Structure formats: C-alpha cells, structure tokens
Length: 104
Image (cartoon, rainbow, N blue to C red; front, top):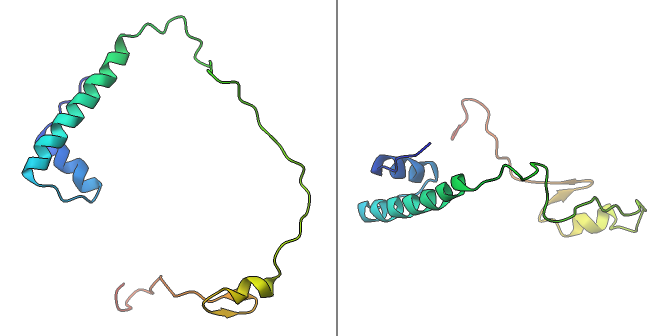
C-alpha cells in the first residue's frame, strides 16, 4: 500500500508532534518522508518465504539474579534530601485541580 505524502499530511504530523513548521520546512520534510517510505518499500521486494517468523539473530534468555536483601537508606536519610517533607511523606506541589478551581 503506497502512502501519498502531501503538504497537508506533513502539517498534520507536525501538529501531532506539536511542531510549528514553515512552508519551506513542509517541502523539506515532505521530501524526507518520501525518501524514507521509498527505502522501506524496498523491503517489500525481499523474499522471506524461507525465513522462520520466530527466528532471532541473537540468542536471548532471561538472566536472573538471586533476590537477596541489601542495606538501604533509612526513611529519615531519604527525607533529608527532600525540599519539603512531613515524615514519613514527601510534600509535593498539587498539580490536579478540582472542577471550578482557577486553571481547571
């Protein structure tokens, strides 16, 4: 399936990425997108009929370590580096507003 790269598509992708782009950048990105899609399209011509779909080029396995307890910092030591604390808690700025509050 071929994707047509249009100026509108480039602007849409830029909008999704929260990027403001100029008309000159639209043309440049359009060219880059077309080259990337052409490169990827070349893979469609590869014969993969003899390739096992579960084949991995590198042998992989899970590596486990022994689950052993180790010394750690005390709560007091950890809270000492906090900008604001009320033991045993960190005090952080509120970031969620209630409905109807300023900025909500």
